[in-house]
Image 1 (cartoon, rainbow, N blue to C red):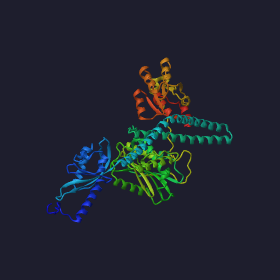
Image 2 (image 1 turned 180 degrees about the vertical axis):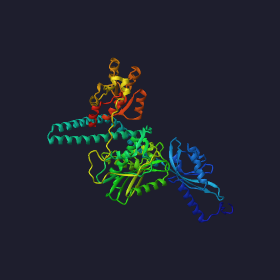
Image 3 (image 1 turned 90 degrees about the vertical axis):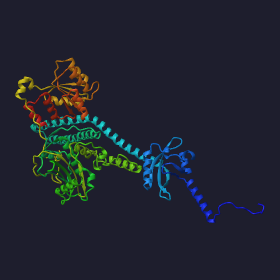
Length: 640
């Protein structure tokens, strides 16, 4: 200016103001260049501000991102975003909420959001404070865990399928073994009778007796193998949600309880007892085979499972009891299988504890409801007693679970697959009950109930075998299996059928395995039957088609054969050749699907291999009305 004065224009500021401005600039730089993505949203969901990191993560320019609705960048997440604003508007803070964002190049990236709200001086919604983090690592971790869980489930399913398919092929050689053992036992009976008659040397008699004992033991192992195959088949059907077809009959409980103990190997140091509490039903109208299978598996677990012994502090005075009683309310017959240690633990104490547990756990009885593997308690899981969850997101947890399952499968008893408890759980449910488990320091108990009639059960207790008493051959069974008396021809049958009623039948055996055929033919010949052998279904059809005069009284038909299977052969024989000869399916398959298929095609009967001699006699009587003459009945009874 002309007066040489300087004019200063601006707001006066203090040194502290300058320092504050510098700090504010540093703070702005801190958020704008922070390594974590940040943004603000208005109450309407408009992006008010975003730092450089968020812009880089999503790939947009500031102009493309800021000022736009956040919903434009969150595909298919509208409901979740609205819920986030609902929570924030209520004054809540959200943390680790997974949201998917769409980048500029079209990729979908998983992110985690932490956020709360800044309110203005009037308490109104100003903007959100949103922190977002890349969630890809967690997603990969979860995906690996899910993949490992699915692989574990798939491996177990493959194990199921492998066992089911393999054991189907095992049925045939087991059938051959069982038939061979039966024939050899019959031969030894004859040899013993001849040896006694001819007064042979004591060494020869001893050799005969020793070999007979070996055969008895072999027969017992074969029986267990057949039971194992049946168990695997039944469990596979139940796992596939197939409905079991129950064959109900009137079951006398006292005999059932006694017979079941004969199917279980009881260790020498265990006392076994059967106890009836009285007042309930003497009979049950239920499936006897499945009920006996349940009790057998529960008893076997309690007396032989090595893992259960580790739950006891003291191994002395171990005793196992099958308790059959009733619940007056609702007319329910109850079954309890108890293993306990110590003289101070009584069955009354255990029953009281179980009843208390039942009262505190009002779980509805089975009544046939669908049970999935994830519904089963740990103790009832097959193979390993490890529960497989429907979902798992922790890879370490999934890896630990798989290792436990692998260790469990590799460490089971050599004579057990650990499927008995799982099968029992399903079977109890199918019978209308609910299998429960109680584990205490000195005892464990399995219990279930089945509806019953009103006839009363007497109070009784049987000592199956005292502790440390040596077992005889055949296990702990103390009630011998009843001999089924062949039925005599009625006068009416003789009058209506004439001399033929007394003649042995002519049997056509259709079987592709030569050894199976030879054993069956030999059994039939010993029963005085005339026989003919066809190696496949086509040969059987040709026999009947080419020689109508060769009348068979019964046809025993295998199902799976080369050239022509038994299903097709029976269809032709029944529906094209119009042959009325009874045809009985004789096969290693026992599933309901194959039974239904055979029934629909026209089979007159169905039997599973191996077919023992007494069952063969039953088939001949039922379908060919043949009964052994009296002299042969007595001889046959001795060979049984």
